[in-house]
Amino acid sequence: MDEKNITKVLVSEEEIRETVARLGAEITATYQGLERELMVIGLLRGSFIFMADLVRRIKVPLVVDFMTVSSYGDGTVSSGDVKVVMDLDSSIEDRDVLLVEDIVDTGRTFAKVIRMMRNRNPRSLRVCTFLNKPEARVVDIPLDFCGVHIPNEFAVGYGLDYAQGYRHLPYVGVLQPD
Ligand code: IMP
Ligand code: MG
Image 1: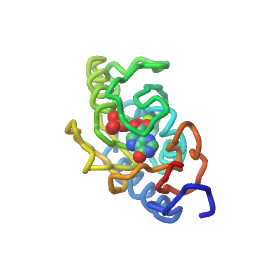
Image 2: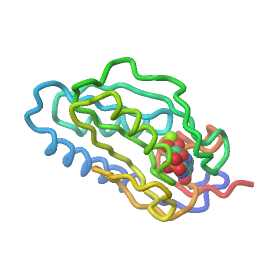
Image 3: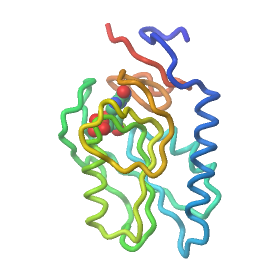
């Protein structure tokens, strides 16, 4: 851990592997016997690494799609504004949908995305997050599949950024900005 400004490791590479394997098994068990492929939808950009690892642990037929919503700008405090920057490619009507997030913090972003997705009438809608910061929650969100609880600190790595940096770290660490 020699990256500048990373003060500690919150989730190690080994814990990431174990967590993704557990979530993949839970999701696989939940979606046995689907009529059509599961639609796994990642919220960009933060979920891209987790998505890539997770789908390889899900053993039912699936397709992937992505959506970009913006909530934070480049800061570390949630603004509560959620904007669709890039929408899905495909319709989710009557499909079994699994939404995948990197982290649920205040819950504002996911709450708005979930509401938006429900309005498109999927057959079923479940949500999966890699990280959860329960102490920061402002809006209650039912998390069907939840990775690791972390304390209320600003996390980077494994897809999560600060000002678009640090996403490529193979572990999740705490960032102490200058
Ligand atoms: P929420 O709306 O407060 O739940 O924030 C959700 C979004 O904010 C996530 O999808 C992340 O992109 C970003 N975010 C929240 N907490 C962190 C963090 O600790 N590190 C990096 N990004 C974060
Ligand atoms: Mg995000």
